[in-house]
Image (cartoon, rainbow, N blue to C red):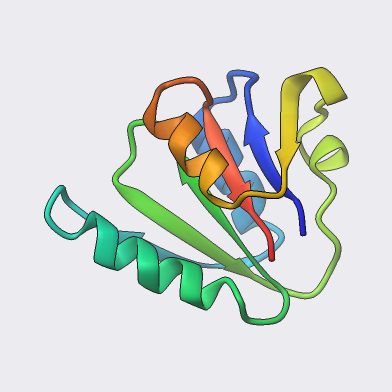
Length: 109
């Protein structure tokens, strides 16, 4: 169980389109009033097989990706280990994005 905190700036469109080209995507849109309930549903769906989630800075959406195949952040985005952090706490990527300390978070259960 690894969750990624993406520190390197990456164009949100590139991040999203790269993932969409490899996996099926579902969006969970929220506003200030619905964020907690939408997040709870999003996290619940992440416990399904072959799924992972994405949360990006300045976007009021959670993205759920589904598909068979391994996820390799370095190969997919040409990242190095300096470009991201790994955490076991799934809330950490969400908090870091909300605090403006990360560009995006990827959650994988």
